[in-house]
Amino acid sequence: MKKVFLLSICCFMASISFAQNNKGTLAIIPEPVSVVTRDGEFILPKHILIEAGSQSEEKLVSTFLRNKLTTATGFAVTVRNAFSAPATIKLQLNTTNDAVLGKEGYLLSVGKKGIIIKANTAAGLFYGAQTLLQLFPKEIESLEAVPNFTWTAPLVDIKDYPRFGWRGLMLDVSRHFFTKEEVEQYIDQMARYKFNLLHMHLTDDEGWRVEIKSLPRLTTVGAYNVKKIGHFGDFSQPQPDEPRTYGGFYTQEDIKELVQYAKDRFMNIMPEIDVPGHSMAAVVSYPELSCTPGADKFVVRSGEDQQTDNTLNPSSEKTYAFLDKVVTEVAKLFPFGYMHMGGDECNKEYWQKSDSVTALMKRENLKTYEEVQSYFEKRLEKIVESKGKKFMGWDEIIEGGLGPNAAVMSWRGIQGGITAARLGHEVVMSPTTFAYLDYMQSDRVMEPHVYATLRLNKTYEFEPVPDSVDAKLILGGQANLWTEQVFNFRQVDYMTWPRGFAIAESVWSPKDKKNWNNFYPRVEKHFGRLDEAEIKYAPSVYDPSFEPRLTPDNKMIIELTNELPGLDIYYSFDNSYPDRFYPKYTAPLLVPEDATQLKVITYRGNKPVGRMVTMPIAELQTRVQRSQKH
Image 1 (cartoon, helix red, strand yellow):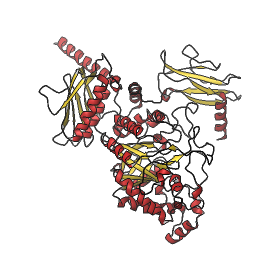
Image 2 (cartoon, one colour):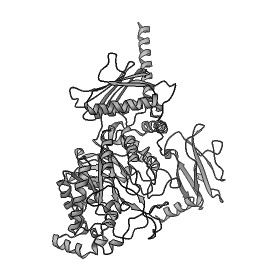
Image 3 (cartoon, helix red, strand yellow):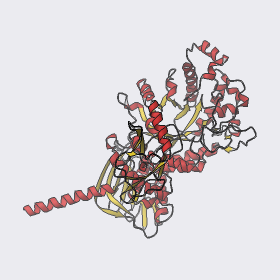
């Protein structure tokens, strides 16, 4: 009897061990609510049968899955409502609503003989399909058929649903224009990781990107500037005779196609028209919108230092007539219920010089220029609401008094969101602290220079719901990619991934499931998937951080730290390129007297995983001097 008991225990422990090991091979992003693994694996047959309903949204899911499987495997895939034989993959809508799953949740079961995805809605089926693809080997992301390959998936039962209904990324298409096809690629990338909102920043000082038929100069004039390459903000002043041909815009037909493309992937698009600041492209197109004399001589900014008024005139009825036309046409193009109207970084010094603004303040009893902006925002809110949309703005719209129904997107940290929520307003969190994808991901010697750094592990700390606010008012969160220093779409990819993974998990997964030590190994496995899909990403997580300091006798010491555990750093001061046969970093380094640069590279075992980083000693000296001043 004891032998039988011991045998049972051994079998049970072996089963548990296998389940744990099998689970260890899973690399699902974002982390599901519940995962139960079982012994064995599913093998995809060469003739794949997908059983799915005939409703249009169900067809979107089955078509997506068919196309994905066909492309990578080269296998024959048949989709029908029913088969005489058991289906390989069954997509099933619940006949009775499962309240736990909600609108976007799903149940995914992978058995030896087949796969079943159940959900209340087609959106849930779609997200279940995305998870299923992550169970197959990384080659499933290949853009062409992989020959002589066995496609397996672990046996698993997954229950999953999102924590938030608002899971977004913002793409700035104004500073640099990206084509409709590139935006579609971005939508596909977002869908992989269960984002459901693309926020398009359509207007700014560098270009107006959406066709407004009643205001044609917005795109014939406002959509183009002089092409400059270098460091945005430090460009030379364009010459009067330089061609203004760089840029572009989306026609209304383009927008309709993008909206449909996103809808087919169960995603909404929210437009942003950024006013009253950041409005140079609009002012150049229609100078009467400015309160500053000489606006007819202004030009669309290319990225040079700006010394001119880029605001709309809050005291002119022409401004509100203009905005009514814009909002009318934009509201018809975007079915999404919210319209973002900017409101950030409005330079009020030109309002202070304006007699008409002064008269407005006297007439409306406005005491501060923040109240002037509040007057503007409240009028604009009424215009937006008259078109059947909910008004949203950046957190500056709080400062002079928030409009009655305004929703707030909190970017200057989370305090604006806290303030708005305590006033009973809806909030989306997108704080610079965790969610600004234009920030440098590695040391500044490796990245296009912007004013801050945001490492992957810091992004992963993003928590959309602050303590002491009503969680029901926090719609969710998003990350924002401003593109001043992003000149092409490959760099859009590089800046988004892998930090986009961290945002996806912060807005989808249960709060108590987030764990950095569990997350980063999954990220590394997804690097292979992005390689297969030919999507660029940043390997910055492997780059060390440099912390220089001076000893009491005025010699420099450099401390190196890794973002990931288990990595070794090798270095040289002699201008040669180190590998694992060079000195290994084990303690802070004393800089040799005449050294001009430190080169480092990170390894895992005997394999290089990091980039070769060259750090000028002069750069470190500058950092030490700067820290001493502070």
